[in-house]
Image (tube, rainbow, N blue to C red; front, side, top):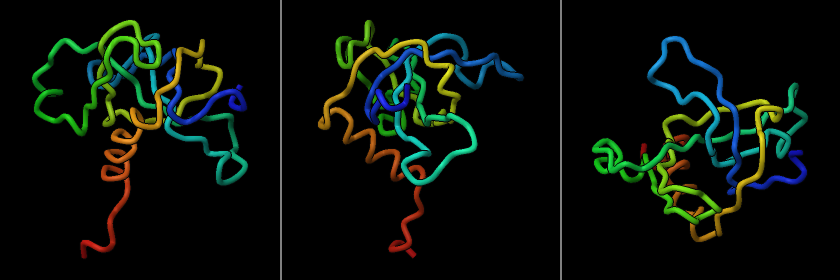
Length: 128
């Protein structure tokens, strides 16, 4: 399946129940594909890097941190609802958890998300 998917694709995936509950996304939900371990080596397991989405209900935490919680509008990547990308919930999941392909973001739609991911995940040695 990973041969058919690309960075910037939106898929529907199954996320397991968490313990403790209430902090990490659970259930069947859309997520954004942001990486493939096989791009740099042979992984031990068939994993894919994703970021889960949640429905945008004008939550105050998302409004206060738009770079950490970028928004997508209904229709982008075939999303059925206005959604928030939860960059703070970046994770690896097994490819078997993906139920179906939803759609793809354009390069222009994905670029600000990628920029925020870089700032969040990579230490800038030039800032020392």
